[in-house]
Each structure stands twice: as structure tokens, then as C-alpha cells.
Image (cartoon, rainbow, N blue to C red):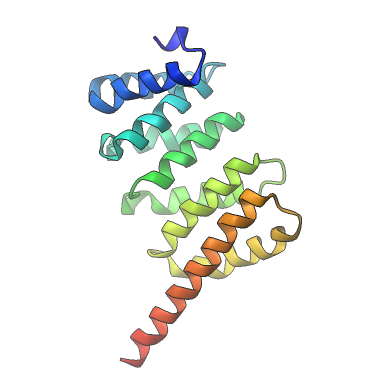
Length: 176
């Protein structure tokens, strides 16, 4: 079915099968390693499958996603991998690797807007676990916001608001 997929409806149909069957999901995930011209389609299917069933993504799947994110030059592949990460609770032992990747994407002058926007959301989720990242992320966002796209600015503002809430919670915690 993957070879014949040509439309969003095809992707969603395959994703539904993958979301319901771990073996199908595993097979499609293994196709991501090939990283040929169909890699964007494969990543798109995986993104929709995880959106339908976030629990389908197992800790063992992160190796393939991280390796692919590190080596891919294709915006569609990176976009859908980061989109997956924003939909799930990232395992503690993978947070640092994923933070490194998403910070690299956020700093990348030639990265697609969607890759950067999704990276902001992933980094926001990670702030709960690595609060010392906050200054670096805020510096990048404030530097880029004046010339950024509306999608970037929207997500950046959400992260800044979230960071303010975290700061207030930490201050209350210190007083108690």
C-alpha cells in the first residue's frame, strides 16, 4: 500500500491500519531507514498513526526516529519525526538526544518553518524536565521572532507563556 500511496486519504488509511496493528507500524517504521524518495511519505504515515494512537510508539522505536532525524536532509521527514515527538511523552533516557536535535533544527537557518514550529513545541514539553534549557530557548526565540512566520511566532509565544508559568511555580516552591 505504501508504494501506491499518492494522497492524504491514502496516508490516513495506511496510518489507521498502523495505529491498530503494532506489526504494521513496525514494518512502516522499518521502511523509514531506507530514506529514499518515499521516506517523506513513510514519515507522514507514521505521524498520522501516532496521532491516532500515541501508545503505538514504543521506546525501542526511538532509535530509528533519532537516527533518521540526524541523517535526513528532507524537510518532510524531519517535520513528521518532530511532529511525532510533540504528540508523545518522550522517555527520560531520550530527552537529551531529542533536545539536541530540536535545538539544532530551531537554530538552522535553512530549516522549514514547520520543522522549527514543531521543534518549539517539543522543547516546551522538555522544559518540564530540563528547566536549565529555558534561557537558551528564549534567547533563540526572541532573536528570531521579529522576522519569523506567524506559525513560529504563535508557538514561540505559547512557549514563553509556559516558561513564565514554570518560573512562577518555581518561585512559589522556593518560598514554601
